[in-house]
Length: 430
Image 1 (tube, rainbow, N blue to C red):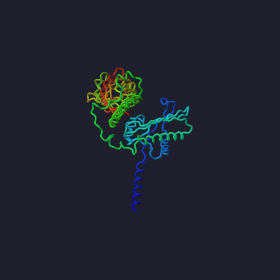
Image 2: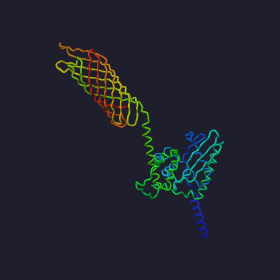
Image 3: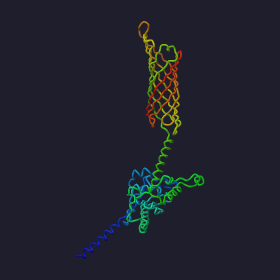
Image 4: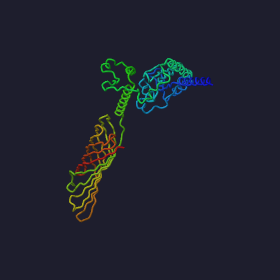
């Protein structure tokens, strides 16, 4: 009986040990950059490629179980905030993905298809988070007659290489889950501000003397400079750099984006003065009101200054009484105006403009005759107006503004009538 118990115990221990060490190391595959062309520099990307998912399937099929291959179904928000694309292009990208997605090993790279020779070239790299380095590189070329056969051969080559790395201890088993800790390293070493890693840019002298360095070479030098440094410092520097690049790109896109024509609806109210004409002694101005629409046509559009032409159509209404209230007179004036303004915007909050145009004037004059009867006169004439105004935006989007308008109206009756208006204006952009 005791012998049976001993045998059972030995078998149990053996099964547990085998179960522990037969647990596959997770190897993730990033989305491959698949493209068509004779070389990588002139190749055109293949969008929505299924090569990665098919390769994961082939790898899972040929794996003996010591390595478990998985695809990344969806990147987290933290990863997308840093990466420009949904795939990995460099070692530092791999660091970001592994850290935020809690991954220890990831394969990334490119697949180039030459349509002329039908040659497929896969350039893959295996990145390890624990050592923060590319552990292995694979280049696999083959003239393809059957795409499925190529993926099977590529999967066999990848699995064979990674199995040798696993046997040599380059890939640890079971995996060390470094990325599951709250921070990239258990005890990050705080670094004083003066010793913070410098941003990866060539010094002015080197930039002038070595202009032939490509962007890829600079990236490789930056990655080598980061080797051996704490992961949290490397990651923090990279995240900061990427955020600065995104902010700069957004600012540049905003500055270079052509402004779209818009339309403003405005309302004005103010006072007017009659400065000449045979009616001048008999008019007591009361109010002037305008309602209309302006169209924005951008001529110059920069970050700090815009120049626009603003055609406008609007109706102006004026009301006046007789200064002698014993003699009742009501003056109603309608002006249909069409103007065009030269509009100068400075920054996001201030603008001034000058312009002018013609108008058609129609008056309704109700007045009491000496006999006590009322009479209505309906004179009409053409005229011209000159405008000068300022505008202040109340929000950064420039959709709401207030302003002050000065207008000089000249009506061509038998004797010219000149009027000056000063109006407070409010405008909404559609």
